[in-house]
Image (cartoon, rainbow, N blue to C red; front, side):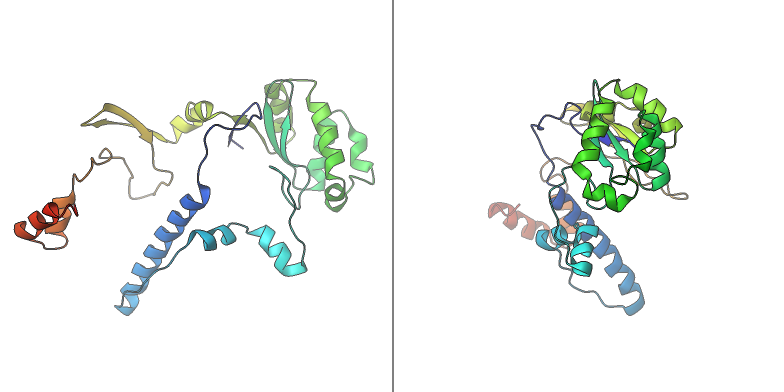
Amino acid sequence: MSICGEPDGKPTKYGVAIVDVCTGMLASNSILAALHARERTGKGQKIEVSLYETSLAMLVNVAASYLAVGRNAGRFGNGHPSIVPYTTYQTADAMIALGVGNERQFARIAEVLGHPEWAKDVRFASNAARVENRSLIDRLINEALSHDRADAWLAKLKAAGIPCGKINSVAQALEDAQTAARKMIETIEHPGVGTLKMLGIPFKFSDTACSVRRPPPTLGQHSEEILSGELGLDEKAIAELRRQKVI
């Protein structure tokens, strides 16, 4: 489990419009699905995506819980709405994330933290009980973790088979060995800025190699190529678009 965020728990000075990003991904998936359908039917179609509908789709299990049993959601911070303990915790020097998904794992983490009695405590003996006592078990885990550093706890937790990870800063995440191993940082020459580092491709194909072959285009770099080659406009039509400051 590798996490990127603010290791000290302080508010971040920047953010990602995650609904915008996910809407773009849904648009891409929809376009691919429509192209596949066109291969079968010979007919194209209009695609609609919206930020609002994307935000609803992103509720996933939270929405499913309400629709199935009428359970409204609360505010759990980084915590899972229906699995406990499954959130971020502060150690002596940094924050870590834990994902305890079953009773066996809870018994193991209780042992690692020096409190094997937790596994037999009626307040924590089942996930349903832990959900009811979320604030208490989270406080007890935070207290236990405060006595040692993150790296020491992570070594013990991983040895016990507990899903866990350190909360990395953006710099730490981008400089991580796994990031390099997965080729998620690419270096390319840009005509305007020279050597440019950028994110790599987050998906890999077994038979079709992916690579970053070109730098980001400059403003209007490919306008004429697209207008003439793809849309079939002649020089006069393109010149008129320029005159009207359309391009």
